[in-house]
Length: 326
Image (cartoon, helix red, strand yellow):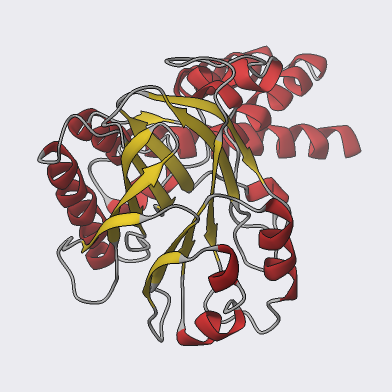
């Protein structure tokens, strides 16, 4: 009786995960189906384990179904698998190995967080060159006022909701621009920074969270307008786009952004680097990103520790190989 119940639970897991995989294939057709597209890592692990259990239970047809359903999930995450097995130990593209790296931290602060101690300690310990901070509120502005001494250059758009944003820099900012991405609720920034190696454009963005049809459409509109803005920008300048994108690399809309804007995913050689939700490890997905275009060497992309937010910070190290010289 126990074995039979056990077998039924395994079969149920195969059915549920197969249906979720099929739903993800229809991500462009409906905003709910797109939500299923964000978890191929979890689906793959469940399906491979279920296939092994089905074989042990002599449920070969169910094992075959599990392995078949695993294939599209494996294909989606396959570009990121080498980084899980063997992270690059040397520069992966574009510049000399001895050039000092630039460190950028993209962190969602969580606008309602009461205790900023962990966030402040992390930022102080990292001593990054650039900070892109999402959910930046007037309260966070007050709690992070010490950053003004470390980062004399900044562009701050504090809001009393989850859609404020901030860029802090150790290097001069030659230009600051508010990006119009199709709504008046959220803030997004473009700055031109004088970084070691030359000028670079840094885009700090936080598209809408797709928790309803309207918000999903809004996020997709923001992504399209961001791609248009990037395409119209000076092609001679390297570009770094960072923030909480509210979608994973497995979404078709993320792939559209990379294609249309000519961007590449900085985490690609280093593994998936899941950042959310910080407190629920089995559901971790990578929705915070650092994207690049132009002559930029990505040296490392990694996830930082818990800082009290529902997101883990993303730590990116890169160097410019050639751009407009100062």
